[in-house]
Length: 594
Image (cartoon, rainbow, N blue to C red; front, side):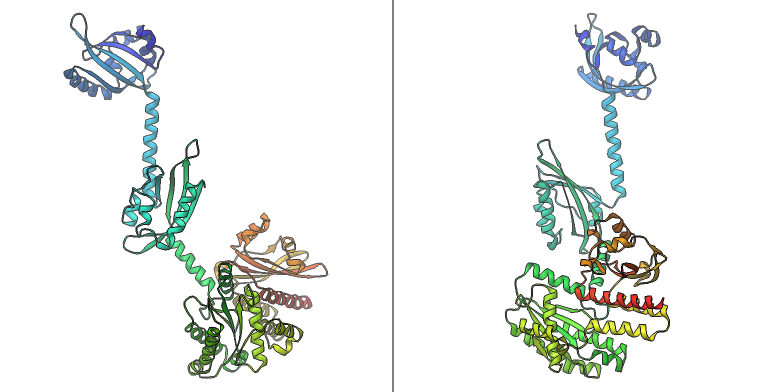
């Protein structure tokens, strides 16, 4: 009965003599099926000597093991490979017990199982583990596994090799956050990332600074995902930590450069807008918006030259930056226009005192440094009383500033409300002298009128606009026999020079015109839903763009693309109006030329 039952499982039983060749005494059919022989075939080939079916490399080891076990007179188990009839080696597990027959002769009673498949799986796992270890040894990334039940975390060995220390295994994440391993400013977002997975989110990613030996911190990027059981309970969190320090430093440097006015080193108009809007979004605390316009700056350029004019602007930036607090804001938003924002001031008198100090700087420090007198007209508006966004605060400070101009320059005015605004709107020439917009348009017109060389005139204008508005690439397309071709291109850096000849998607721009005007603005190309238009911009490394259409009586004459490849462009109304006016002038100039 025992032998019959054994045939129903992937194994069986056999008895063999306790000799050097393990001569079979009896065996069930499972053994012969395992080997692929009939009982007679096995007897004819091996003379029932099982030893010779054992793989040659394992015979001596088995004999040694049996020799030791016989001395103990007990049950022993071992694994080895048997050579089958078809030449294939199969793994077998054997449990052998030393017994004696009626003649007091020793023999082995053996139970065996076919473990070939489990061995294959085991071998595959071993290979996979070695492969993983090799991959991890070749990569700079750190792999981690967090056990959510035990609060233990394990890292690949290269973390210690690269960063010079071990992160505590137990008590994660509190044990890690309690140390100085993570930069203090990055603890909260990283903790929130892990918490989001614990609370049901599938994955998270986070940039943070990780302690690096005794050399400060390095930027890393962590990606993690949660593993859950069939009841959706979180079991583990696994992830990868990638060193992004060099790329992050380059990005931060690029962002800083994109945020700064290249001449003065102050924030540019775009960054000024961004910071003010961000402040307003989260703060109700009042601040003063101070607009400074250098009086008669055009005369300084004409009399002393542009180099001296640039020197004057640089010195103005240095001096006004020296009198503000760390959390205040200073920016150059146009040719000779500066903005100071005094944040979180409880009393307007603080702003008045600061403006009087600015006037002293213009009257004394700058005259001493430059060797000639320069003055300024100042307008002040206050958040939130005079506006809840950058454009409104600028508009009201601008009205107050032109009131200063009207009253004789070299003074300041505080915005007095809607009454002054209505008077300004009804009779602007009474309040205004030339704005920054007017100066640019006048300069463009002078280039067009005085330059006899058409190509040179267009080149000068594109370069002027590119530098003033901090563009990376400006491309002028003209209609030639129904198709738009590149007529002229300017770029701020050779890296933005592209192979561009014909524009095939003009209709995409026309369909995106701002409220029917001949201009369309793309603050961030990632928000573009049209895949063809998005691909066109991405191939050009464009991040933001303003496009002005040259069209008359439904006939498309051309268009101009003002592209940014280093940051977003939240173009103000004044900026769009200026670019559109320049586009109209060029259209008139080129159309008349034809």
